[in-house]
Structure formats: C-alpha cells, structure tokens
Length: 583
Ligand code: ATP
Ligand code: MG
Image (cartoon, rainbow, N blue to C red; front, side):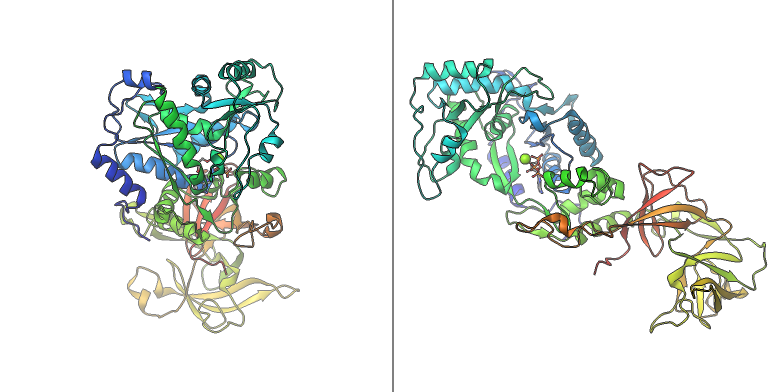
C-alpha cells in the first residue's frame, strides 16, 4: 500500500508504455463525431496519445466498484496525455432511463473527472451509433459473416453445444445472402414479433470458446428507448455493440473486468472483419481485463442494490449505508478519499476481496489534514462544576485544525454546567479507566483540571448529574497547566451555549463480510442496527451547512446531511469513527 502521489506501475501502465514506445497508435486519425474508417481518415491525427472510456449502462446508480473503473480509465488518460470518454452503453431499451444518465454524469464529475478537451465534450451514447451498427450488420451479411436465424431462442440454446461438445449448425446458417439481407431489413422495419428471428454472426459452431459459436448480433425488441424512442425495434447485443463503439471512438485501450476475458476473441473477430471490409479504421482497439472490486460488508450488484431500495430496506439510492457513490457522498465520503482508495487498490488480474476498513481508512487519511475540529457530545449527561460561579462565562479556545495552525482558533465558553459523554463517568471504574470517577482528576480539554466529587441519580438508579470541582490554577495554556498530572482528558460543551443536533450513527448495513456468498439470500445478513439516531449537543458556532465535514474530537468524522440538514434542525451523519472499532 502506498500514499505516494507518483503513480504505482501496473500491468496496464506497462502495456501503455510499450505501445507508446512502439508507436502503435501514433498514426491514428480522429473524427468528431466518432465514425467509420472514411470519416476518421478525413480527420486530423489524434491529438490524444491514448483513448480510454468509462462505459456505464444507464440502468442504475454508480457504486464503489464503478469508481475503480472511473479512476482507472480517467486516471490513465490523464497520466498519459490521453482522453477518456464517458460513454453510455444504452443498448437495453427496457431498463434504461435519463434519470440514471444524469445521476452518472453528476457522480463522475463529483469524483473530479472531466471529459471536455479543447472544447469537445467526449460524451457519447451507444444509441448514437445505432444506424452505423445497422449498416455494419448489412455489410457483414453481404460478406457472408452473418445470417438471419429463424430458430427460437430455446432452439439456439439447445444447439449451441456444451463445454465438451460442439454445437450444431442452424438450418438457416447457409441460406442465401439475399434472403438474410431481406429478412434483416424486415426485422428493422418491424415486420416481425419479438423473438421470431435474430441476426447471428457466422463464426464456428465447434469453437472451444462458446462465445464464438455464432453469437447473436441483433434481436427483435419492440420497446421504447429512452433516447431513440420508437425509431428502432431491433437492438444490438452488448457484445456486438461494444467493440464497434470502441472502434468508432478510436479507443486504444478498452479496459473491462475479467468476466469479459472469454469475449475478447469475439471482440477481435468482429473488429477484424469490419476492418477488412473497410468499415473500421486501423489500428483497432484492444481489450484488456482487470479484476473487479469486491468489497466486504456490501453488495454492489445493481440488481441487489435496487432490491434494497425498492423493498425499503434503505431510504433511497443515496442512503448513507449504501455503497453507491450517491450514498457514500451523503455519508461524508469525499472524492479525494475515493480516489485515494482506488489508488491504494492498484490494478491486478487476480480476483480478491477488499476489506471495508480499507475504504474507511482512506476517508480518515483524506479528512485528517483538512477537516475542521469541533466538539460534540452524543450521549449527554450533565457535569456540574460545583465551585464554579453561576453565571460566569469563561472563553476557551482550540485550534480549528492542529495540522493547519494558519487556520486559526475556534472559541467556546466554559460555564458551570457542561454536557459530557455519559461514558466519561463511572461510579465504579474498571481497570485502566482514567476519566471521571469519584476522587479522580481529569482535564476538561482546553479548560481546567477537575476533581470528580460524585453524582446524582434518579429513582431508577441512572446517573442524572456528575459533580466535580475545578482547580483554578490549571487552565490549559497557562503556566499552571502542567502543575497537576492527569491521565485523562474529556470533551465537553456548555449547556447554556450548546447547539442541538440530530446525529445519525451509521453502522455497516450487513452483519456478514460476504452477504451474497454462494446462493444465500443476502437480505438475511442485514444488520438490524445499522442506524442509531441520537439527540446530541454540538460546540457553539457549529454551522451544519449541508455537506460540511468535521472531526468531532475523540469521536470520528461527521458530515451535515445533504438532504435533511438545515439551520433550524441540524442533521449530522457519522461518516467514520476515528479508529476501526468493528469487532
Ligand atoms: P452491475 O453488475 O452492478 O450491474 P455492471 O458491470 O453491469 O454492474 P456497468 O454500468 O455495465 O455495470 O459498468 C460500467 C463499467 O464499470 C464497466 O466497464 C464495468 O466493468 C465497471 N465495473 C462495474 N462494476 C465494477 C467493479 N465491481 N469493479 C470494477 N469495475 C466495475
Ligand atoms: Mg454491465
């Protein structure tokens, strides 16, 4: 693990270094908008040394796994004077919506990345290429590389063969080109119902790689698309659209997760056929695979996230317990923390699971140097300084941030009655307990040393007040401060001056590290105590402007909730405790 800002090498960097050295991509042309070989050749030499892309499907909200891909693709482009495209892979009309497009744009921007270079916004949609893809499909049919198959989906599955047995040819595989072409046109024109026929590539039904056994290119789907409306009733399969999108956009390094490794031969096959037919410009993009992020104590499949939201196990896509980027942001995660986390993960080809504590530590490390400090009391009990004059207000001060003396000091008053944490007093202290108990000396941070003199209890035996006396010469920052040695220091806020706030103490959403392990129902691993709401007291002057983060001394990092917090009713989320306390 490293926190250096110099990028750590990885296998992708090695590949890019070699490609740049060999000049593999230096003669590429670029066209705006992206296009076929002819369009690209007419454009100038590509000013970008490499091109990568982040290709989300707009069918849900981005999560921490996507952040890894975003940081990787945009990060490599930045480091190598390249350009990273934001491309919406919207080839599935039923599941995609504009709402998701906007949410994805917001989150990639929030992470700190940008896709506008020299005035060109490199934001693309797979649906913008529907016509080009269709023209390419006709070219493939005419060249004998594709045919219209009238088998049903079930028949296609049954004739595909197995890992050990080859598939069998469709009876339509060798139909005349003109017949396939006519049927493809009828498919496009809406003459046939869903599933009646499909366009398949003609490759090799005996290939040991099942993905090469005549994969489907187009299926019929009478459905309304979020951008193209009802213009189309055939939609390209992802595996066919994706390589073509990459090639049209002049992507050099197409980086995806490992589960697409077996698709790479088809990726290459389709691009080579289209290049031979003069449709796509060379050099062609190349696909590289890396291990996806698996994070403990969360689920990141969009389907499962959707289930958590729609069944009401959490309060929306931005619930601070979710690993969605919207949820992490609301929880108090910063873009810097997420980028640092991704940087520390590195890039590898070996699947692994990252412990949630690694993400939490990145947040602490990002916030520690910059977050303003303040005092909060989350589980308050009253402390009365019995020898402190009633009505006296003594100003105290503390650094806004001990790492940044130039940020200055914050001021707050000490008075006779203070709120302290209930846990900072014990009538009968356990071993090594150095805070308040009868007879013990403790420092009120930034104030005086006090001697605990006892407590008041109610009929039920619960402590309602703790009593103490202060030692007048021991004020912090005065020569007498060190005259009395104490082993404990506690935080406090003046009862008369404290700001009331609702504080939401979040814990992990799941009790198990692998909630969706195997076939188990991930819902049964939900942590029933993942959110505790407390009424807390904050240091006077704390302004809970939505999105503000603090370190509450001794407690952790907190953020004013983006949705629910207001001046009249501060609502504050605990982002992370100061230390890893998960047992
Ligand atoms: P899900 O399986 O949750 O639905 P997805 O992979 O289908 O996610 P896409 O919108 O297609 O979601 O993903 C966009 C990009 O983000 C893809 O390039 C994908 O490889 C990458 N990505 C998704 N999840 C992860 C992950 N856990 N780790 C790294 N990259 C990921
Ligand atoms: Mg996907």
